[in-house]
Length: 460
Image (cartoon, rainbow, N blue to C red; front, top):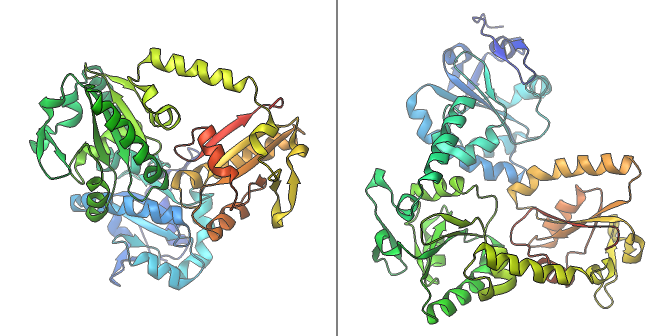
């Protein structure tokens, strides 16, 4: 066992610990890089550390991993931050494949068989990905790095509560003093323009005084692909009517080819590819799903946080996206809900059933009188993976009280195999993967992003 200097750290439960002694007590005398270099534990003294629990087999880990890679590239140059990877992979080839994609440190795979359980207990890790960040004194500053990294990126470093508070105060000040220029221009890079699909630069000043829709989108997002033509239709109709309205694409794509192919078919403007303002605006407007259309009024203030659902449901009737217009739309929706029943929601022709495990058919009539949650989700969705354990926990708690509750999974997966993977982890019912009701329910309940829960009362 290595003779290392004691360094205390604060665990998740607030007790005082010594994580370096922990590693040594587990007979982990060195860490490795994917180059094969060995790094002694005591060389990490005085550095801020991230303990990263992850695995190749989980898509959610792969999605988060890319975000962490980008942040680490920028932070590693500081020389005072390091990440230690503790793999949850079952096989060494999975570990090696995953490890080859990253440049930070890792606990050698052979050590993990005997030590991973103790590390999980020490940091209270129950699922992955999990990123626990410690300051230079070994104190745990956050056990929720998985949320902070996508939300704040490099700007969140060192990810302490004080830093997060500081960033939130800056954002609040920016909201109070918000203008279209403060949103779209970038003083740090001297960029004061947006671009058209043919590459021309359009000064931000030309957008002042207009109603602006900020369209947050991902080219590979199925919902974005389906939504874009509807938005194009609304945009062109408003253009024909001479309305003072413009859309600016805020692309969250990582590949320039995808951005160009997607933007090339759009008639509006955009921020340049990979402009740092894109991620900052996603954070600033607290983006939780795509597609999203944030409406900025003629005075430069935020009018609506997301009108994608309204455009999906009402098209041009949702314009000019004012509170008064949305109040009218709400009254229309209430009138529809007055005649709604569970059968009218879930039965369509001969499709009068949901399925349980092994494809067993459960008549919709068996669900009448229960509280129903329609759970729209997909295997490829990062947020869905994060949300699912919480929903399962709540489901079991409510069922244990003998409450009349059931959940019906409505898949947004692209293939049967992905559906099967998703449904296998769920203790409730589902619509079959191939089922015409899925699209009609998505339209009816204006499902633009996932995960999404629709609650149906016992009366339907």
